[in-house]
Length: 338
Ligand code: TRP
Image (cartoon, rainbow, N blue to C red; front, side):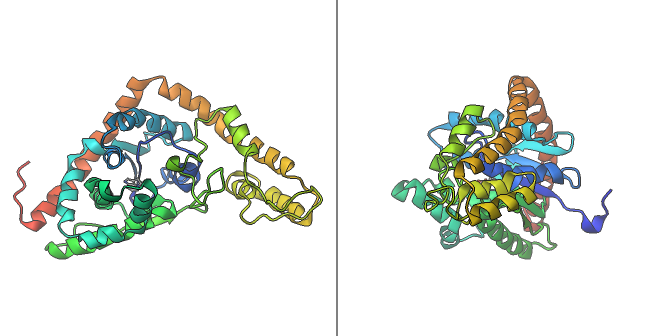
């Protein structure tokens, strides 16, 4: 099916801090469903990373592991093709993090723009948990432990991959033979979905998400509250599509892009009301999410089956990640005892 020159190993992950939303869907989940037919793919439930800013609220993380599992299966991630695994059950990831921490300066972690923005947004100041500051190092451990060379993520994750590659080069330079593999992002065509409030990013902590489990009513309310063009007062007025969340979503989700182009043209010319655009968007989101919601309900009703899938995937991931850890340790001259 694939020859060795164009084969890739895919890894991506999610913090289980809540059910996944449309931003995850267009930024990464949708791509994973396609990629699993072409490449070996691992999907990591990053519970340790979730704990880095929920240290005092571990239940929030543990409860959401199975929510995220149900989301994965509901969108079509197939455990027969994709290895789904749990970060906290993979000791090699924590050990690699410890080894990498010694080759990354504090100044470097403080410079990571995504982490900087998160620190400001969460208002940590002096209460910043140490683990949070270094989570990009642990993410580098996630990616390199699987020797993943392709990572399907949104553009907010680019600084993580840049930092990962610095670690790859630095660590490889310390080893007699290179062990770690550099990685590249696979950005989706919509690498950042705005929130339903028009904020630049859909994010749980900003409270502007539409989750994959949203009810019909949630979807309808969210669409009807959406920001459009504030200067488009009468239906006959010409409207603006740039920065108009309804059109951004139509671009991201509508299956017929020719129809979206026609709607845009009509809107810009004047004569197309916001209400009609919203009806079109609502219909397309209802059609997308209704089967996902149904499948999700079925999957989350059977926790034991979810656990079996996670267990099997994590066992497979354990082997792969221990192997990389052993190679790194050997290269560093550390005795490998197990
Ligand atoms: N940082 C990612 C997020 O917040 C989650 C994540 C953890 C991840 N480990 C990863 C993503 C490894 C890609 C690869 O969404």
